[in-house]
Image (cartoon, rainbow over all chains, first blue to last red; front, side, top):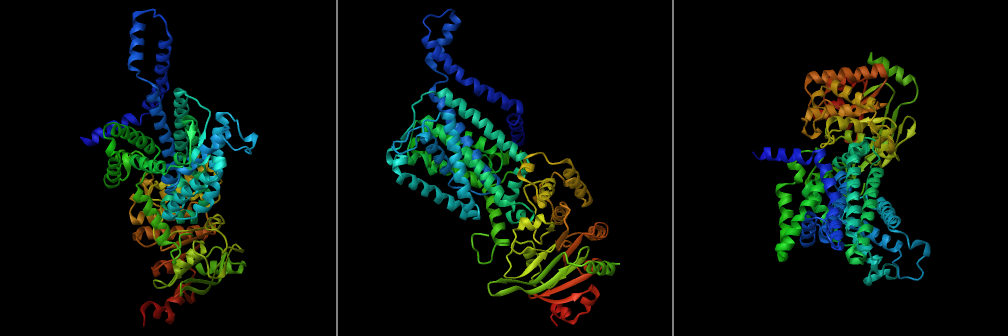
Length: 378
Length: 258
């Protein structure tokens, strides 16, 4: 019985037509928002049908700014979790500092758009438009990923996780201290824009592109190579795979996309400071959402993010005081009962694994072939 | 017949793989102590020794997962003891492992296709579809290894013997110059061992492939190898044809403790 329900759900949600339908519906969603605006400006209505429709739109506001904002936030979380999954899920490097790229992208974009208060800030690096500045934020994050990845990706397992957590904290303090550039505690203000449908569309399109990119990468030999590195890094190296190159490439792609999302988020927020841009809760979100959906699968982060986002919304609205308890319990439930996440129930993608599975991979790296002195590096 | 290959190989000049004074220390323990060996093109050489004598460590040093603490290794006349594991692999050295190292979450076919990278494949090539020739070769090898029905099965779900076979297939996939087989025959049924023996002999005769085998099964070694090295406590105890080695008193002492 349960299996039948799972199979039915699976056949619906992994159907290509269903997915395209969902995307089209999402694309059409802001039209109700625009229709409501249009109705407000309308002085006289021409038909009773139009009148009742307009009354419904103005009184109920089925798609108001808050709804669009909620969806935008959800899309952003989906992109972040998908990016995290590229390094954490595919190549098995659990990154507890991925938010550092989000913050760098946010600050890069803000500075390039001209929000620096520092007089000596070079003029050619300010006043860029949103698109180029967002790309610039991505480049900043990517360059930093290459530099830091070249050092930290040599570390194995937990050492890498801790090094990245340290990177996040260190970068936060570094940015805070350089207050003439970053604004320190005052933060930076971006050009003000209040256009919910715009960000809804940008984040929706970015989400579709990012998830498609990762899905495509998974089908190529490059994606399979990343999973090979997760399953057995030393074996992969002996079988002719330049693991460092692959890890850094995947890490850089993930960082660049995360930086761009950070830039978009900064513009939407119109204000950033060190604490909200380099917030480690964002990393924990990425890890938890990917775990719930299914580490190492393409659809996992999407499903996990959507489920946790809406659950959190409901819990926040109804039991504000207990929402953190709820998240702790959810984490325990995931680890104990659905270690492979929702995708593990569906058994749709074979390459999925659990956090335990990733950690077992770490064991293969250090215990069987590592140096006998137990040093963290190869 | 095997004697002939040895003779011709050695007459043909330089060894394909040569170690001079290979030393590996684990703390104070010498896992390998100044071991000299050479393997000539087209030879099938055995490496035997009691447990803990340093056979697998030697393989690890050759495929460069372990750093040497002394000595030199030459492959195709090039010093490889400073190269990275993947660089040595690209030169045409492939191996199997005593402990299974298949990629458990990937299918048997994906495992085989990944081993294509044992020879150099650029990042751009990896983003384009796999050449049909490679897929065909992978399927062909899986068929030979009697794994056709498991092509799309996750490698982690395969039995021990099947994983062993898959590893041999992965080692053969890149068409290497030398293949190091680490206890390839353990956990495989006798009929299949005969098949593997035949296939190794065939590869050696027809394509001039070189093999270096670690094996405890003396029958397997005697069947295949023209020369055998014996290791004990990290030192080379004896060297010679299988018949010579079996009768060597030191070797008997090392194995039976008398």
